[in-house]
Length: 323
Ligand code: PBG
Image 1: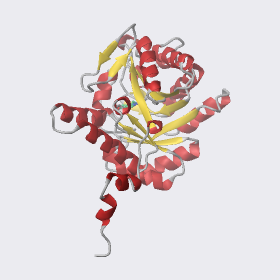
Image 2: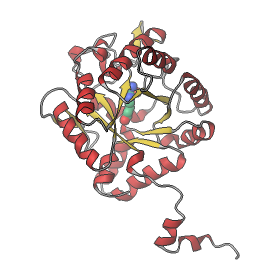
Image 3: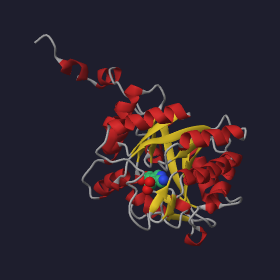
Image 4: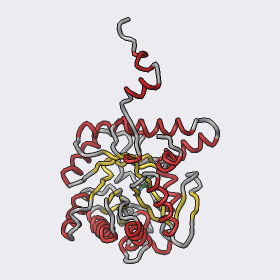
C-alpha cells in the first residue's frame, strides 16, 4: 500500500495540522428573543437554555456575550397580541419594544453588530410574513411595510437588516429605501433560500407568531427544491444583498454548498430553533454527548460553505470553551 490515509490521523498534533475547517467566535451570530417588561427572563419551553429577555436583561446578556468574544446578535421581538394588526403597524411605531431594544443595545455597546429581522409575522394579527387579503399573501403591498420597517430599524441603529419574509423584490426595495434616506452603509443579509420548514416550530412558540391559518408555502421555498435556490441567489445578488442566507442549515447543507459555489458573497446559514430543540432533547435524554454533537453540527455547517452561522448554541460553545 503506497497510500495510507490513516498516517495523517495518527496523533492530535497531525490531526490538528491537517484540519480543513474551523469554527470561531467571529463566525457566530446569536439570535436573541425580546419581551416587554422589566427584569423578565422567561425560558422557551421547547428550547432549554434559551430565554425571552426584557430590554434591561437583554443588555446584560449582550454584555456577557461580548466578554466571550461573541459580537453579533440577531434580535426578534415577542409582541403582545393586542398590539398586532393586519398591517403590522407596530413594526415601525416610534417607541416600540423592538426599536427601543435596538437603540439601547447600540447606545450601550456601539461595537456590537446588531442584525434586525424584517418580516411582518411577529406583528401581524394573521401570523403571516405579508399582508393577507382573502386568504392570499399580497407581495407588492407588503414591500411598503417592509420598507418602513427596515427604515425604522436603520434609524434605531441596526448594522445589518435581515429580511426573512421571502416576498419577491424585497432586497431591491429595501436597498432603495435605505439609500434614499442616507443609510447607504446599512447592510442587507437576505434570507435567500428560506424553506417552508417544520423546524421553525419552537421559534414560533418563542414569539407566539405562528400563522393563524394555512401555512407559508406560497412564499417560503419547497424543501424538495435545490435549483430554485439559484434563482433566488441570482436575484438577491443583483438586488444588492451583502450576504445570502440558507435556512434551515442541517437539512440543507447541499444548498449551502450550492450557493457557495455560485456566488462570491458570504453565505450565512441559520441553524434554526427546531435543530436546536432536537439536539437538546437528545442530550437531555442522555442519548448524545453534548460537546461533541454541538461542535460537530457547527463544523459541518462551516464545512458546507457557511461563513457565518446563526445559532442558539453560540453562547454555550464559547462559555464552555468548546471551540
Ligand atoms: C419569521 C422568521 C422565522 C424564523 C426567523 N424569522 C419563522 C418563520 O418563518 O415562520 C425562524 C427561526 C428559527 O426557527 O430559529 N419571518
